Length: 230
Image 1 (cartoon, helix red, strand yellow):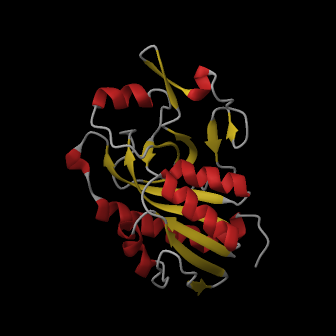
Image 2 (cartoon, helix red, strand yellow):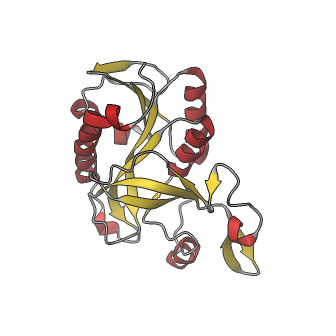
Image 3 (cartoon, rainbow, N blue to C red):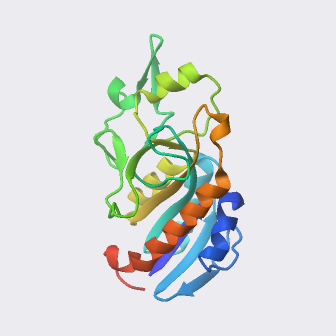
C-alpha cells in the first residue's frame, strides 16, 4: 500500500521522521521507506491553500498512491478539545468562501452564489468518506483560512457561519484535491493552541501526540481502507 504523507512545513515533519522510521524527504523527491506492507512517501507543500492545491495535484498527477494523509498541527476553536488532542477532521470548509451582504457576513452557499450540493461539496461542506477511526480520536469539523486575522470580533462573526472545531491553513485544499482525484484520504491533526490564547501554545507536545497516533494508524490502516494492493 502506497501512502503519501503531506505536511505544510518541515517544522511539522521533522518530529515525525524518526518515530515513523521514514527517511528524510525533500519537497519534490519520491524517496520512500518500506514498513511491512506500507510504502510511505512524504511531501512538504508549503503554507496556504494555493501552495498545497498545486503541489498535491502535481504529485498525484505523476505518482500513484492508495491514500493521502495530511498530518500536522491546527488551532483549536472548540475549547472542549484540549491542546495536544489529536483529531480526525471529517468535514472541511473554505473560510474565504463568503459574501459581504449589506454589512452581514454570509457563506456563499447560504447566499445562493454557490450550490452546496455540487461535487465535491455535499450539504455545503467537503466531507471525507474514508473510515472515521473513531476508536482512535474524535471526528471534528474544520475550517481552512490562510488569512491572518487580528480582529476577534470579525473571527467570531466569520466563523459563526461554519461552527468549526479546528482551523488550519490547508485542510480544505487537501479535501478538495483528493475528492476530485478520487483517492482516499485522512486529515489527522494535533491541536497546538487555542485561538485568541497566546499562552496556550505547545507545539512539541502536540507533535509528540500526533506521532504516537500516526504510528497506531499505520499499524492497521492497510486493512481498514479498501484499496487494491500495489
